Structure formats: C-alpha cells, structure tokens
Length: 514
Image (tube, helix red, strand yellow):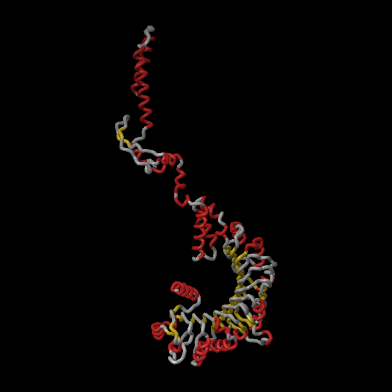
C-alpha cells in the first residue's frame, strides 16, 4: 500500500515538473503499466490477508457458532500471507447449519425430539409423583410453576394435556375466582376432582362458580354449615362417584345436613360425611337416587334412632359401611324398625361406641368385621350376633378387635366366638395393657384332645404393645394360634392405616406361592 502510494506520488511529481518547465513530453508507458500492476498485486494480497483468520482468533471463536468443536480439525497449514501457522477447521454441512442458525442447538437435545404424546405421558407420571408427596392436595399450581416454565414446547404440551389439570383445590389462600378461571378451562372435558376449603368461599357461592362444570364432577369435597347445604340449588351430576361432606358445627341449632340438591346422581356410589354435631338429634338426608355402595359416617354425638332412617334408605346396594360415633346416645327404637337387613353388605367397621349398633342390623354375607370398644362388651356383642345370624360365621374372613380387654371372663367369651369362626383367615388384635399377656396365653393354650380353633387362619396381626412382650416372641417362634399353625404372625403399629397394605402384601405372597 505504501509502495503503491509512493509510485503514484512520483508519477504525479514528474507530470507536475514537466508542466512547470513548459514541456509536453508524455510519461513512459512501460513504467506506468508496471506501477499499476504492482498496485493491483498488493491490493489482492491485502484483501486475502483480511479474509484469512488469525490463528489466535481461530482458537477463541465459539465452537457452537462455528462448528469447530464438532468437526475434526485438519493439520496446521502455513499462511502464505503471514508465514504463521493457522488452524483451518474442516467444516461439515451440519456444523455450517449450526453456525448459521445457533438457535437450532436446542432442537438436537434428546428430550426435545420426543413426540408430544410421549412427553405428555411423562408429565402425567410427574403428576402421579406429586400426588404421592406433600403437594398432593393441590398439584395444579405446582405443575404450573415447573414444567410450563422450561420452554415453549413443554408449555404447549402441558397446556394441551387436560388430564394434568383435573385436580381443583380451592383453598382460603389467594383468590378462588381467579384460580377457577385459570385451571377449569385447562381440564377440557375430563372428569374433575374438586375440593373446597373451609375458608375459601361460602358454599352457595362456591357451588355457583363451578356449576357450569357439573357434568364433569367425579369427586367432590365440600365444607360448610348445615344451613349452607339447604341453600344449594339442585344440579345434575352424571359423572359424580364420590362425595365427601365436612359439616361444621354452629351455635344456632344448625344440626342438619341435607343432600337433596343431588337429585340426579346416577353414579354416586361412595359417600362420606363428617359432621361436628352439637346434639343427639341430627337430621341427615341422603341423595334420593344415589346407588350408594360405600357409606362412611363420622359424628360427634348422635342417637341411635337418628341414624336408622338414612341407613334404611341405602341398605339394598350397600357393600361397605363404616360408623364412627364418639358418643352414641341410646333411645327408644320401635321393634318394627329393627333389625335392618343389609343383603349385600360385605364390610362393617364399627368405631368408638358403635359396637352396640350390631344388635340392630343383619348382614348375612358379611366378610370383614371390625369392633371397637367398650372392650369388655365387644366379645359378648359378637357372640350374640353370631348366635342370631349363623350365616355370618360361614362368610366372615377377616376379624379385627380394637379393644382393651380387662375382665378375665372376656377371654372365655372370645373362645366361644372362635369356635364359630371356622372361615376366618385374618385375625387382628389391637389391645393394650394390662390384658396383653393374658391375651397371648389364651392364644397359646390349647387342649391337644380338642379340635383346633380358627382352622383356616393364615395371618395373625398384633399391635405394637403386644409385640413388646416375651410371650409374643414365644408365640411367633412356635407359629401356633389356638392349635392352628398359621403362615405368618406379625406385629404392626397400633393403627389401621397400614393394615390394608399388610394384607395386600400377604395376598401377593400367598398367590405367588400357589
């Protein structure tokens, strides 16, 4: 560049001198031509040097933008312009595409190449994990804060998967109206699992907000006072299967719960009512057309006559009945009203002080029976029931006692019950001291000359208080209960939450052994 400039300046100088001396001699044509060629050659070298990257610049470039990290580099070559070694990357068509379109790097991530259907199933598995954790009561906001914030693809697939948004839990935190407006439309036409909190909204107003989706209700949990249920308008619920009512007590004599507003619930098979009653006279009105098969009633205080009318209404199809009454008030029951026959009932759980309720019913095909306190009355009540309904002894498979036996005469009554329970396969005692040791002695002692009691017994379960005694270790070591060798004797915590899981494990093991 400098040499070209000097040549040009020299030529201009000669022409200027010639003009100044009054001469008109032209420049040498050969010299002028050689100078132009030299200028062109230097210009081409300079342009080539600018286009060739420096070796240091090549090392500092972003490999994701140039593809240098993907393509295999060639051998170092010597630059003809600079004489220095520089790295010439061997670019491929893929690296060239990535170099021109850096945003395409995200598209090669394996999970982004999955079809939308598979990605949707992964999200549904994530929902199952959430439902088994601490956010099980309200998974929709958790999903909305996680998977929809990753990228546009995930957000599009999540919002296009209606089954992710079927769990609607309206709590007292936040604004219920905005919560429902956001998540109800995302559920599409899928069946809904709806739950309201005690402080969310007054029950009639809450029901009006979800009324347009009544055709999708599958599970419904409602909180409210007794008078609130009277104010709910009748609604058709063709998919409703499970209804859970939590009624709070009030001081204005609001001692009732009416479910007449469920006039059209053809699939309602499970009903659970937890009522904080403030007096023995409580009015309960069940859905008129619901074919209930499972009924759980939990009351603070109640009289026997109050509970008979609702039970008589659903007795024909009922298969599972669970009663919990902390204070059962006895009153006069007309003889014509009892006993109530439950022809399809297979499981009966009588908690707290409902053991005496066994005198008022007949269950010819009962398979599971739980009796809880008062402890000394439970064996006598069971013996009287087995005497009045002999068919129970041929169908009963699982027998649970949740009582504290304190009187020595109770154990003699228990043996009389065991003589009739020839088909029982699972026996559980959740007893407490001081009768624990006597209980173990009763189960161990058996006259060799007499036939064994409980001949079909396979699983014996005892509470943790019994398991701490030395007698229990001896019972487990011999594996004999009332003269019958059992497959397993196990101790669990004093609760029923783990009982079903224990029996399920036992059934799986027995089926695999067969």
